[in-house]
Image 1 (cartoon, rainbow, N blue to C red):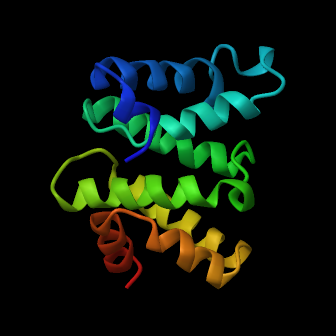
Image 2: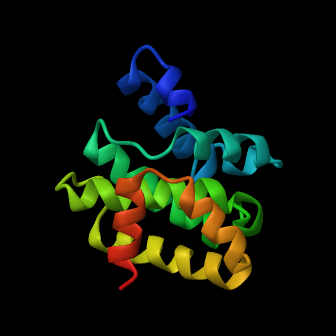
Length: 146
């Protein structure tokens, strides 16, 4: 996959950096949340680094934080649906394989985001984005939505 993480020499270190970015600046109650007025670029970089899979505890925090960011409007569903479908498909795929990268409640929230995408983005656009996903991610999304 053509993400910054696939280019990184040390994926665990890369994931820690992504997690720090979220915890310091992007998540609800983050220490730097109020001192960074425009979080757009930071949020895009955070999305590009997801999903996390090395450290399950960090992954759970970050994937739940992603849901909060969508709820707070820091991630624009209409603009970021491609990344969101990729990230959520991968997370659900890891969970299906037994990797605890998201809690049950986070998985439910992620499916809520999929619902929002379906209500916001037209069906042909979603189909095209879905077709570009990893087959495991496609399968996980289809099973989760049944």
